[in-house]
Image (cartoon, rainbow, N blue to C red; front, top):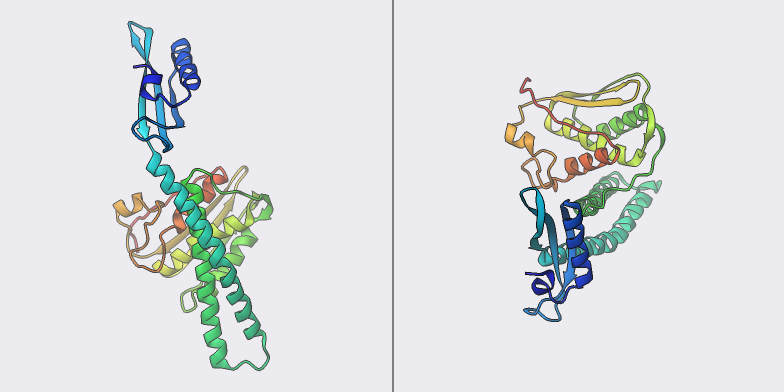
Length: 284
């Protein structure tokens, strides 16, 4: 069948141009998104993902084959999810910011009582955690749709940034051993400070929360790179869990987290052009 016979309401010029390119070059073209209508569903736009490839006989290109996958429902689901996250992000962030600001004002009052201060700090912690969840959802949708994460690079000292993150984690996980920080070499580079703080906070926080004894954070600057290692002691991570550790919604088994932290951490690291890995020796 010709492209016009298969998709009569899709502009024929674009389809025939693609077909001629395949016949002339003998090179395949993949992931071509086409929007149109069919006689079976007039007035309803549909979306297809197409893969075009040459058909050869004796080394000669004699035709063009097309693999077509309908992705209408997928695109509708993606659009709905993006709108939903956008609404949640906008409509919840503003009142949560008001809660955070009000809680901070209460804590700044000179005559605030100890019980009220304690309750207010709990409200503040919960509100900040909710803002973090919203940010994670927004980042997840951005990465999942292939948009990536925007970076704002500047020259920073990764050692100083890590020291600040370790201090913040120590305050957040009071009662747990403070991580040991080891730094060596030149730790300056052109990175997104806020995004790297997000990565470090996730890694150090996980090490403190799930490990036994003090975690260890090691930074080593070399000629063209900086290596960061976060190590803790505890039970071995099963291989099947280790293989999917950086996939979305792979939490630690509880219901207190979305399971997006390591997924977003990997996306941030990749956006910087480097890699992140996890290993578990099983040694205490």
